[in-house]
Length: 442
Image 1 (cartoon, rainbow, N blue to C red):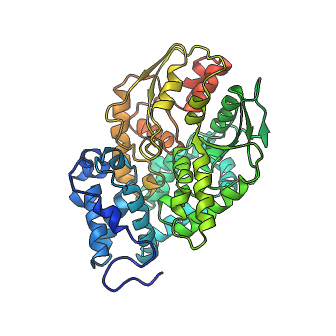
Image 2: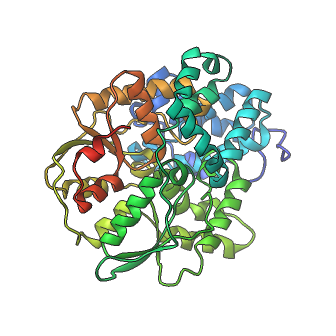
Image 3: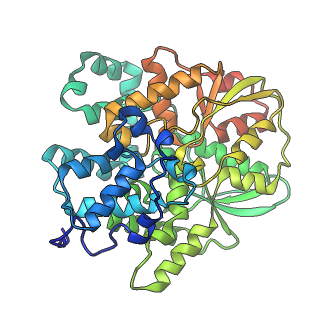
């Protein structure tokens, strides 16, 4: 724990920037976009309220459990960043503040245990893979449903109960080679991030991503030694851990020859990797910061790459109504909204519908739905009801956390709707698969 100044909540290492705080004019445009303000109507659980607490901490107010509770309650969805007319960089302020909280706020034993479980597991694909076979067997035998029906896990370990509920239905894993050749003429060489949860629980999405890129003339290079990009750690204020993961990721993607673009298919990963320069900002070694900024500038979401290249592969019809859900770290954090919709509209027969209150987070928010299961469930059910109102046959999004969160909420409401990643839908159209392959919920 770093020494905290006696006259304030924060230590001297990168406290919430007074310059960024001063950009907030407390106009209130953020209020109707903030999920926690909409849930509770509490000023301190709004972006401008939290910014007020950051300023108070800089000016001498001690860090209290109540103050930390307001920071912890934030989903980090960045809808306020999109809504703000003054350009307040709340995303930067939140990461600075959460790093301070992690260093300087003593958590309870239960909180520590849950957080350590999360961060000893999710950022490590090899550890997740060891769990995959037992989880799949439990699902096939119905043991997961039996455990859930007892209510014991929910009563005594709500965080673990949330993890169990969110686990997707697991099919056979699809492994990827070190390189996937372009189909037809080679238009570009790209390197692909496979991720952690995406790689282990949604390997079919990675396989579809590689096939779609190859069909559009990309040679896809897949570093076999890659691990976690650091997104979960970065968004949770675990700065040294996030920097360690980021350095390892940059090293894995170094020396990949002609690959100038790093492709991601998970919104949270893309957001964190594009922000590597900020993660290393203020480092004594300016070379590290510059390298991180350069690497971040190479990162693009799958939809950005495909719209930039333009389609060459034939799209076969998919007669289906699709509701596209904007993952917060794609729409708000990266500003990528039009590209996925444009790609879906290129598919003959596909009808795209918009979800009411689309800018409001579904409650996934990285690990928020594990640490804060009750408000996350409330937000998830609101999102699910909004989706149901569209009459869509299929929900499409570009983030594994959103896929799990919304599917769980729909199941709770007793109205399951099939879900798919953008890459999976494009892959089905390019390969000419029947639309029923997207509607199979098994």
